[in-house]
Image (cartoon, rainbow, N blue to C red; front, side, top):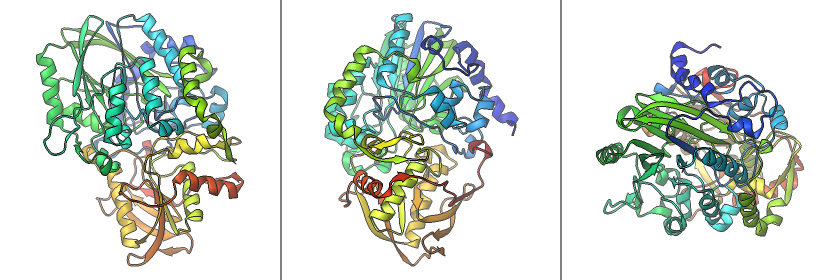
Amino acid sequence: MRLARRELLQVAAATAVLAAGGSTHAQTGRPTQDDLLRFKAVGQLTLLNFTDLHAQLVPIHFREPTANIGVGAARGLPPHLVGERLLEAFKLGRGTADAYALAATDFEALARRFGRIGGLDRLATLVKAIRAERQGRVLLLDGGDTWQGSYTSLQTGGADMVRVMNALGVDAMTAHWEFTYGARRVEELVSELAFPFLAGNVKDATWGDPVFKASMVAECGGLRIGVVGQAFPYTPVANPRYMIADWSFGIEEERVAAEVSRLRAEGVDLVVLLSHNGFDVDRKLAARVKGIDVILTGHTHDAIPGVIKVGDTLLVASGSHGKFLARLDLEVRERRIANYAFRLIPVLSDSITPDPEMAALVADIRRPHDTALARVVGGTESLLYRRGNFNGTFDDLICQALLSERDAEVALSPGFRWGATLLPGQAITMEDVYNQTAITYPAAYRTSMTGAVLKQVMEDVADNLFNPDPYYQQGGDMVRAGGLAYTLDIAKPAGQRVSDMVLLRTGEKVEAGKTYAVSGWASVNEDTEGPPIWDVVVRHLAKSGAVRIEPNRHVRVVGADSAGLVGG
């Protein structure tokens, strides 16, 4: 399908800067480190940004989604373009390094050609090279979800990531999953940071006083840059409230506007919002709050190979898992952006020389855990991945484990967007299992739910994802359901999207008044009981032999925009 005129207009500005940024889209061979760093510098300032690292210290594979559906005003617009629709929109050749990094198209073959992505020692190499090129003109900003998502981060309570971020020389960060270590632990870790932790929308729940700094002013490249930090506004809803019971969160648009105005009144040359709102939330915010020059947006793990412009505001989406380093060069005149150039640099691990200092630090962090990390617990004959609005094969595996090990009729696995990908033929290690499950509330519960309650759970998650107003979206993907088939109509109103629920064990329709045995994990309720999910998965793998996950065809989706679906 060809892109509609509205979609073309939205991506025109983004594609215009790709050539200036030095994209590798013309290459079908593996680019060199120099290829990745090639860039025509612009102006006085370089902003470097990564987000949603999820504690991935070493290189991994990570497949982008085949379904990322936009609704409301975002229908058919970036980041809701996937597969060949995304490659077409941004003029990226199929089979190239950029195509491998940005789309699921031909993923397995391209993964074997181009290798793994990410790794803090590779990221450090890129950052140091750009800092050497642009001495005194670089700000490195971390969009959050940095301290959680791996075995070592869980074992050290996030301390491993504080060490590497200090060593990397980050200039500021904001947060989301960081808060799942609990308020006291977050305060401890913040005190160990060598840079500001910015989260102006986190307040004392009783008195409304700020808990963290809202902003900072950095002097860089002869400019004064105001950086405003925005933590994930729905943290107490998406994650356990009891862990941060004394803190309140929110989008707080008026507070953001006031902070921007204050910085402008103090004479800053540029205002940057370092945000964990999610892309569609930030797109709406940019249209409503004046005076923000750049939004570095995180949370929804979107990787967009060009800048998206909303009014006078530039939006940058830097992907996740250390897969990309975003570089935005800015020429600022009279407190306005006069020119810019952008490159979303894929961190292709096999193309980049590891930075020896960071490599030594990562090795030191991992050394006490080497035996546990390397323990083989299974193998896979299938591509195991997580990302996608409705299904992920690793989540299908987790659901199978819950059904069998917890003797359930229905399994529910949260629609998290973090978790690495395994290629067919790879061993499954304990590290791989933790990369999918490393949270501080891992209990795999078993409970009874009526059909009516089960439907309400599904409806609530669907509205979090597909509410047409971005300010009511919480990011993430649809809850994964094992042992259950259903239809989801994107276009229906809240409470009416889920229908035709069928119990796969019997082939019978789910009845509202009937009770079913349901198992799941990552409940936000305090005192949830059950074994940790990683133990459940490991026990299941021990009985399963090599894993083979057949395509999941139990979710029927209607009312969706085809641009957000592979094959649409």
